[in-house]
Length: 288
Image 1 (cartoon, rainbow, N blue to C red):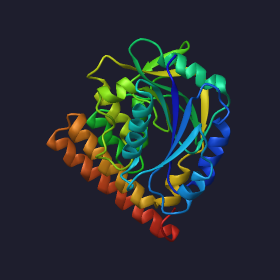
Image 2: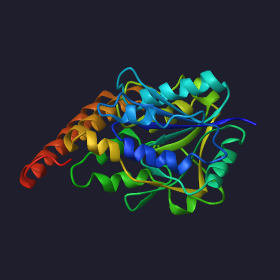
Image 3: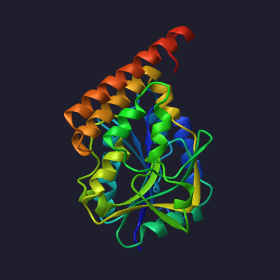
């Protein structure tokens, strides 16, 4: 039977990472837990190392190269140790109900031609079950200040799409997902040219050129205690700038955006940035 490795990405968030470790450490379906500390600037790594045992190993990246970089760092370690293996990648701010939930996700991943599997995710009073890769036009409209979100609703699948145990989708959230090591190697791992955001869309675009499918297991749900470590480390404006930089990279490199598309993406992104500055000015400063 294939081994299952659980990889947690940590950055300056020891308490939340420890909460997840305590949550899953006794799950029999998990053969090994890796914590990848993405070069934290606090005492996270030192404190996490104290938790190590034969079942849990804590790794530290040489530098903070971003989210995809940390995913690759852990994924390559898992492949080095176990060769062909199923891998769970997880943010630290995840809550899982049971060992059985992981077993059900692993069963979905075992299906032929399935490359990635995600659960139903409860976050910020919403349900996340995947989405369609947006067109450049949808991204441009989605960038519009104040009204952009209504256009992005079109990339969400209708409720009736989610029937049965598993549903095919184009993209799943990377806060928590499963992937086969063969798929990771097939797509030459995750693209490290973004620091944060758009890893999901980029990977989905890569998978379009393979035989592998992406599934959501409709019978497994987890809680995403949203962006704890990110919110502690990056202020609101900087997060937006990183998001828009990743968006442009995805559109230019993976989504066939034209020069005109890229112009309007930059233009609408700047409009929204100006709106954010104005809003924060009247609120009295940057919001963390």
